[in-house]
Amino acid sequence: MLKKERLQWILEKINVKGVITVNDIIKELGVSDMTVRRDLDELDKEGLLIRIHGGAQSIDTPKVKPKYEKSNTEKQELQIEEKRAIAKFASQFIQDGETVFIGPGTTLEHFAHELIAKNIRVVTNSLPVFTILNQNKSTDLILTGGEYRDITGAFVGSLTANYLQNLKFSKAFVSANGVFGDSVATYSENEGEIQRIALDNAFEKFLLVDHEKFNKYDFYDFYNVSKIDHLVTDSNISEDAKEKFGQLTDIMVADE
View 1 (cartoon, rainbow, N blue to C red):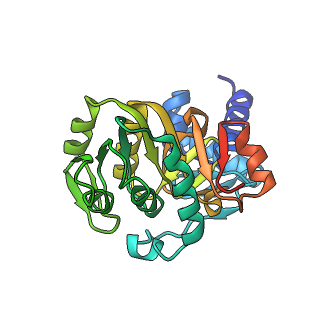
View 2 (view 1 turned 180 degrees about the vertical axis):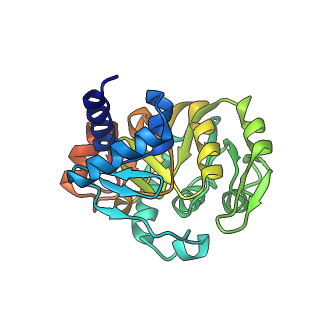
View 3 (view 1 turned 60 degrees about the horizontal axis):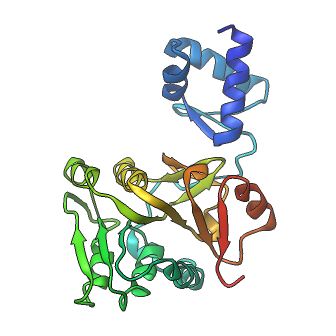
């Protein structure tokens, strides 16, 4: 590939994803680390992207996530009403008798509260979700186990991944810290990998995120918005975000 073609490829990718890493480019184009870094430096000098550690971001990326991971307790105080609305709206898509996966996150904890009365099978790697649903003894409830992350209450790692590989779900419900371009991102690579496996093994994929998550990114990009069947959010989503992401997936707005 000629240099001109290579630079154009980088710009096209970064304008879609919002952020790209040196390793991403090496893997896709089969060029050296030094070549990639020179290309990114050149595009940065021309004002066509912004160089960041380990890669680059689009000049249109509006906001960088904090460099620290908020705890489950901290997140419980954020966008409470929006998360409740999303949870209540999304609960209508689960019917008695279904087998579903529910990932970690405070939005999904609100979601679990809405499911207590349902006669379903739930597989989860979230201890808070498990604790909430365990109130209903008619729920067939499975907690994956694995390496425990106290900050989010999630089980991750190879044991969790291996367990989920052989399971199929009628629906999978996950959340995220950021949705940008065609990417769904979270802080922890380990948590992202578990959610990716669960989504891949589900016949219908749901992403539950409040309006604050749009046009923001985090450390680990674990899925594509375009591969999600339904994105459920709250009524405070901007018209711009609704139109932009609505081109990639089905946007469902709670209490619209």
